[in-house]
Image 1 (cartoon, rainbow, N blue to C red):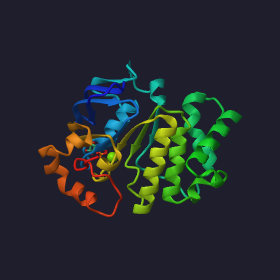
Image 2: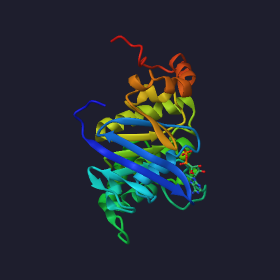
Image 3: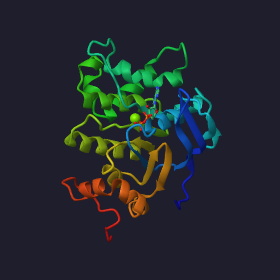
Image 4: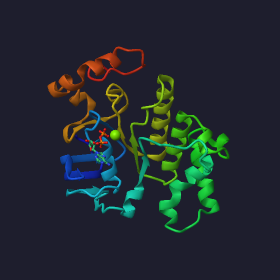
Length: 263
Ligand SMILES: Nc1ncnc2c1ncn2[C@@H]1O[C@H](COP(=O)(O)OP(=O)(O)O)[C@@H](O)[C@H]1O
Ligand SMILES: [Mg+2]
């Protein structure tokens, strides 16, 4: 990619195995600051594993990860520049946490182990809830909210860590089309407001050329990575995903035609 933007995430020759089985092999991936990268690939292709490795939650077998030019060790505090919205958020209906408590948890990396949230942390959490349009339910129990509402709260929790990078794992998997639309509007607004770099795993191939400025295709190893205009032209991509992308491009979702537009 040609750009004068800095590399914020640099993955070099990364191998990850789980229980002795290779899950990721020879991953090389550079993500530029302030870009929005969509990570696509089949189920079981290793998307979640890669995101967790970037967060320092999994120790790689080989290779290295640099965040802002510095090595990331497992559990390293530098992982806190990354806000994380995990794939499956199983909230028990009766979970004894308020929405505000849930968002304050995003501050624990800053507060430190054994520390207690202060007024400043609560204020920060409330302003993040305002940002995602959920401040009015701050006192409700998290388990009483719908899936889409909970997702917004978990985005607020990630924001509360004051991240430079927002990592989202299949965020629209359980959201209907209208919900997806408002989710992407929110995401674009937050990117702008906080100068975020976004790295989002999704199995929804069609949304990627519409919303992202880079695509990474992962199936155990990284097959393609680049700007949508370039990737969409490649035969490998057309073979793997062409028909799904065409369907979205000609569907009802408002879009700009990447690769075909003349402006
Ligand atoms: N905790 C785990 N224990 C055993 N195997 C796992 C575990 N997590 C992931 N895997 C395996 O690693 C591979 C990649 O999984 P995952 O990263 O979840 O892929 P994706 O997110 O693309 O669906 C799969 O084959 C999956 O079975
Ligand atoms: Mg996954």
